[in-house]
Amino acid sequence: MLLTPEQIAEFHERGYLKYGKVYSDSEADTLRERMFAVMEGRSERPAERIADFHAGTGRKMIQIVNIWEADPLFREHLYNPTICEVLSELMGTDTVRVWHDQVQYKPPKIGGPTDWHQDHPYWPIVQPADLISAWVALDDATVENGCMWMVPGSHKWGPHKGGTIGTNPDNFDPLPDLSALPAGINIERFPCEVKKGEVMFHHCLTWHGSPNNNSERGRPAIAVHYMPGYTRYEPSGEHLVEHHVHVKAGEPLIGDHFPTVLEHGSIVAH
Image (cartoon, rainbow, N blue to C red; front, side):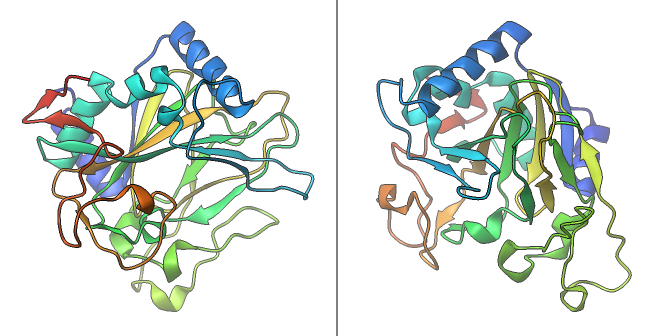
């Protein structure tokens, strides 16, 4: 066991957990340079998608989906043994697969926000909502350069308005529809600073967002969205990677584009 019972309880109570180092500074630097190579079209193969969420606004937030398809080092990252074992302990399962990965890079000075949201409502084709994301900082993510913020316990409140929480542009507070929430809940947001090479885990229904990066440093990070082995395909909506699905509705989501990284408690050969 890598986690203590207290850490597991904290994750299930709060909906997120900062674990600690999974890469040395130099390893994180190498991944960051590979990220820029993919972003700039210098990789051997393309990623699923590269897009700027704030194109035309004067702000930038570059998203890369499935960078593991473009670069072998990011494919290797999917199988990081510490991350996979922690996920197994948090999920309570011995089989873990990849849903997809996602880079979100906020460049210096003009890095744009990621508004408050939940992940799973944007993933309607995978059920149930038991997925966990492993978010690894490729440089220090701080309040100054736009680290993520979380609302503890929000994963217990169910899907909210299709996953969009609402964001106050003046102070970055979440602006949910209170009529759609349980009575008596406490909505407090907290910054989640993550050092270079560290990983933080969050549940797919936990409210999270990140404000502008106005600092002199970029905020590079790689999130891999993992699913327990029993996650099934339910074609109840649309998703960017759905064209890779080759199983029938109701069947476990398996296939070459959804790698099994842990099976029967052991890292899968790759």
